[in-house]
Length: 233
Image 1: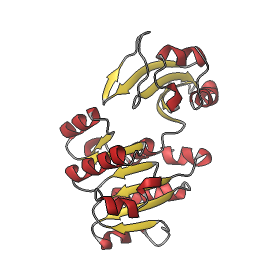
Image 2: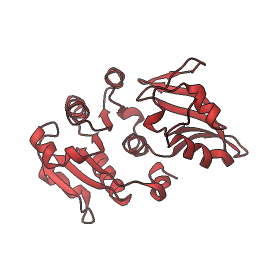
Image 3: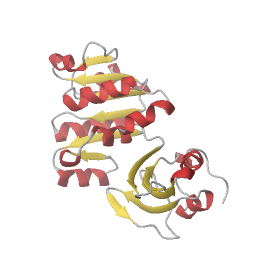
Image 4: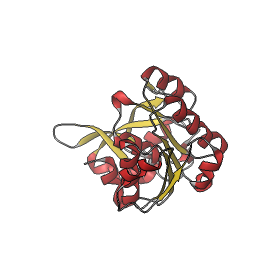
């Protein structure tokens, strides 16, 4: 089951702006709309919006995705997520940085064709997805980081390795607090595009992706605990 399908029952509606209406952008727009989000799509070519289909009822804006007037028309000021998925690396990263740094959009992702450049942009704080490893699920995960995404399951189905959503209130807290507050064990973090095995001194930073080992039966409790403000240490 895809990440977007698992998310349907718990989605919190938000406004999402997508730059690029190719196969990737149009697929994302329709999936996000199906989840109940409002969506605005930007593309330089008006004809590109035909890919959205007749059921799409979001906003379409013809223009350059890093132009401020275009972004404002697309509703960037109220957006909680922004995806730059055009066919140009430079345009994607520039638009993503404008969305993050000028308009304070929390969930931003840029599609990058060159994996070597993608790593550099990760270190600038912009989550990127390189074409060689791209899936719609990965981008959906960055735009709407709620719940968990299973990465491995043991043959008996009783234990999972999951990338799990952590509320912003956990930032600045030690990783050990996650283990004290739940039955999960933090296997590793992805920080600035690099895997990190935490120690007892590791502190959670903004942008970290958390990967935990957890028993299947304990998942609901772990998700609920990590989605709210942590209790005092």
